[in-house]
Length: 231
Image (tube, helix red, strand yellow):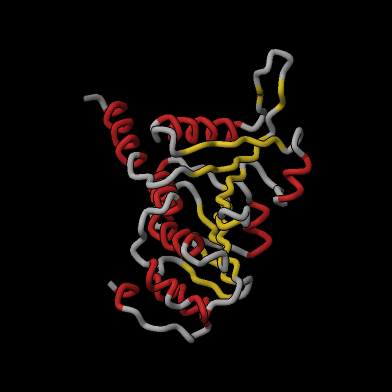
């Protein structure tokens, strides 16, 4: 088996772990041609869409990709406050945003993206009970995670921050931002290295951290210690 065949089989195996049907929204700069085909000037959009379509193909119908254009769907773009492309959205059943990816799920970022997809589809996550047991101590919160494609540590924290968003009953919104693709964001927040996590615009977690560290920030020290959080 060639490396390409092995990688394809691994993707099929991971996508087979989706529990329920899910839909992802992606915003690009697509323009419809007279022949019905779409063209995109944004190469990152093209790459991301190709990756998503491949994952959908391997999902046995459980993953649906909806593409919207910032140029042709201005109302949708305004509704979701789309400022950059490509932007990927994970929404709850009521259409509320849970996770925003302003980063390409490529390379080392692909595996944590697949884990996020699996949890999004209803697969039981490791820290679910611990997170839900602390929800009464968590106010509506925003988590911004600054990463790069080449960062060796970023893939380790992404499943943590996305799991918190997916298991928070809508209380937590997580945004993942590639600062190499969006250098103005790095300048705005003074980000010097990655991974760098910002909780509610004021609490910083620099480098690697454990789930209990994030919980401490979200609950302002009022967390309940649950065994699963420390396993």
